[in-house]
Image (cartoon, rainbow, N blue to C red; front, side, top):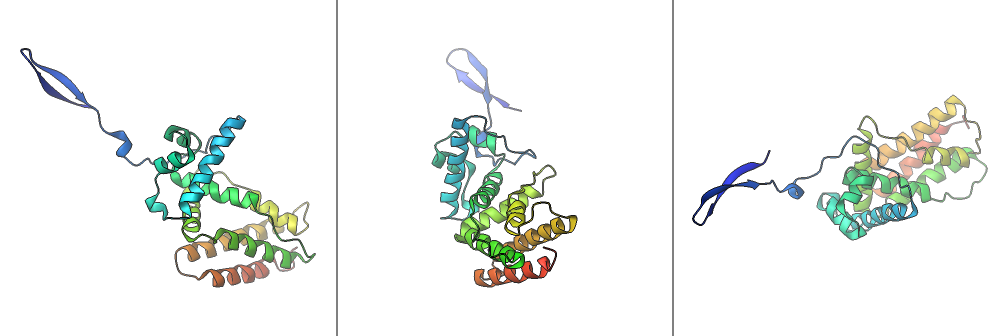
Amino acid sequence: MPQVGTVPLIGTGTRPRTRWPILDTVPRIGEPRAPARPATDDQESRRGAILAAASRLGATKEIDRIGAQEIAADAGVALRTLYRYYPSKHHVFAAVLFEQVARFRPPPPSGDPADDIAALMVAACRNLLRHKHLAHAMITSTQIVRAQADAPDDPTLRELILKIAGVEQATPEQLRRTRLVQQAAFGILTWTVGGALRPEDALADVEVACRLLVGDVF
C-alpha cells in the first residue's frame, strides 16, 4: 500500500503526496503457469529473439549475473513482452534447452538400437555442454521449472530416442527405458554443470548408462 507523506506549498500549508514503491528493483518471482504460445509470425519472431538473446548472454556469463531486463533489452523487446511468454528468466533458459533439443540433428543410425541411442545421447549432451555457463543456466533452470506443479512435459527427446531406435509403436517397457535414459542423462548433466564431473567423464558415463538401460528391450 503506498505511503502518504506531505510536501509544503508556499502560502497554503501542506498537501498529501503519494510515494509509490519502486517496483522494477524487486526481483520477479516466476508464476506457476505455462509460457504463452505465440499466435502470429511477429510473436514467434519476438519469442525467438528472446531465446537467442538468452543464449548469447548465457554463453558469456553466469545466470546469477543475468536479469530478465537484460535479456529483454538484448532481444529488443519490452520486459512485459518477455514476461508474457516466460514467467521468469528460468523459464527462458529452460526454453533454450528445449529449443536446442528440438533443433538437434542426431548422427545417422547404424541399425543397432543400443549403439544408436547411446550415440544420440552422447552427441546431444556434448552439444549442450559446449558453453559452460549456458549449460549451467539451462540445466538448473529446467530443474526449477520442473519443480512447479504445472510444468509441461516436452516429448521431443523421447520421440528422438524412439525414432532413432526404429520404434513406431513403443511398448510400455520401451517407454519406461526411454524415460530412464532421459533421467540418467539429465542427472549426469546436473553433476557436470555443478562441477562434480569433467565433461569427458560425463559423456562416457552417458554412453555406459544408455547401454545398461536399453539392454535388449529395443
